[in-house]
Image (cartoon, rainbow, N blue to C red; front, side):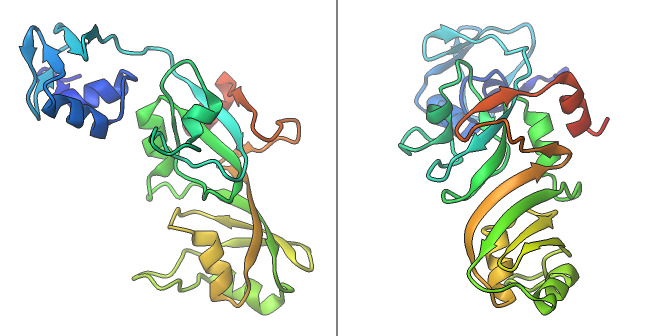
Length: 234
């Protein structure tokens, strides 16, 4: 926190109270107080100041939480309580956490969940090109031409082609696809672009973290210190 403090919405988010968007709503509603004065939009907080949110004092969460979660299909990667199948309610963790990136509702597999904003930002940064590996079951036989196109980088209708992917052929209609971007429905759109369709999709790896066979669908575990350090680039 610099000598001028941080914006109140960022402070509340990093304290594990709510999202920045929800903080802005509560600030506009007059429910946030800094040192006895109702906070306005854009207000900043110093380390020595007292913050009250909806009548309760706020203390910053010092414990870093990072979970590996095997997301089932049907669960939505959002903290929005109005979504009945949101991932936070599904996990029911006792402290505020949020997903690192997204998996489509009908996609299952490895999802990282944390309360560490800087780490989440680093893993999602376009410039870092973090590997994300998916197991793909396909509607049609996968051939060498489709592989060649994917490994060159395909056009999915955006300004830039996708970055080259890494392909492993497992069976006639089953492959793994490793990408380093996070575009909307990217894997499905890439396979569609080369003349195939995804019928089942599971993320099996993110960066150096693999989805373990021992982790049951719908379950999560805390990452070890070594795994956290590895994700940080150590």
